[in-house]
Amino acid sequence: MPRIVRKFLHNFVAMVILGSLATPIVASAQESGLPIPRFVALRSDKVHLRSGPGLRYPKVWIYQRRNMPMEVISEFDTWRKVRDWEGSEGWVHQSLLLGSRHVIVTADTITLYSAADENARKIALISNSVIGKIETCPRSVDWCQLQFGDFEGWAPRQGYWGIYDGEYIE
Image (cartoon, rainbow, N blue to C red):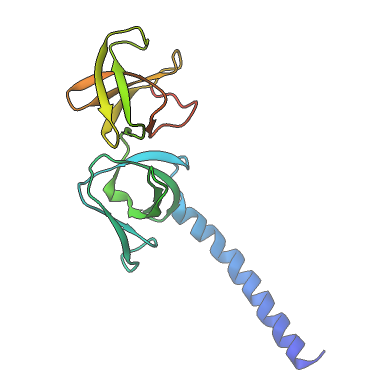
């Protein structure tokens, strides 16, 4: 067998062995045990979105809205790749995220009602880009109970981002 072929085979076998040894280590470092994708919220009024999972990666955006909902779409060690309601993606350290559930209004306005019924008393009109907290989204109705500042009420599951279709929070 020619020397160049032997060298190629030797390098190829070495790469396969090293690759198979490294895979379990990387996989265990990435797993938080939580489902992906999932919704979280920003912990602070100033959160840096980075181009990669680490401080050495450049900042690509600065979020300045506490409780803004984000969707975790990937994990690496203590870093979470997130997507915002407009589709921007990047990496955030896990310490800057909360497990509490929030929504952001994507429609021009949504109406909060006193009960999960369009014939119920109207409590408030909530404007585009306002952030609110999810209180509950029960299985029994296609509505969610939301809180926006001092206003708490029910809204149909449309016009806001931060909960999956068919997801229930009780």
